Length: 178
Image 1 (tube, one colour):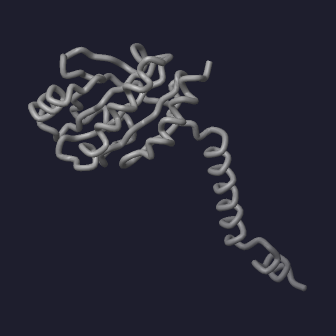
Image 2: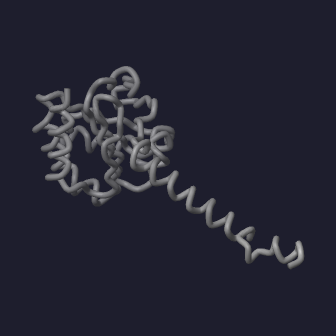
Image 3: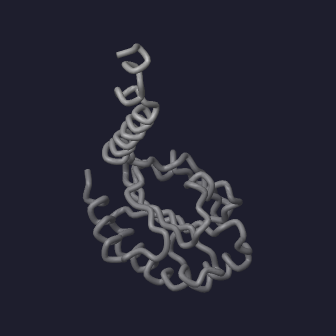
């Protein structure tokens, strides 16, 4: 047998073998990341409330359980879910839940202010210039709601209206955690 025959691709030195091994290693790494290290942290973001007051995730909301809900007055699903969001907040605020409703940058400030006042929204309402949505993973679809625990870990991201029984159970567990 010649040297060329011994080093042939049939003997396992094929570039395809290395590609397959790299893909397998990538799958294992991704699985490990999502199983153990994929816990997303809340970004260091600052919200500008309708009052002009600024609150931040790193200072004002640190150590608290809270929701961040991206919404728009032009979003039909947002308008449909808002009464239930109010009910959710009212059920849990006595246990320490905080809530920031972030109006998207394309929403007219006068519409947001009008909606907030006429519906007596009981939680904090912020106007976004686009930077907060970007910090939260480039949020573009509304409603998008994040549930954040006391340690700044994002427990859940809902795109669209949440299943409120599931949201209640998640909030209950997060608020009961020491």
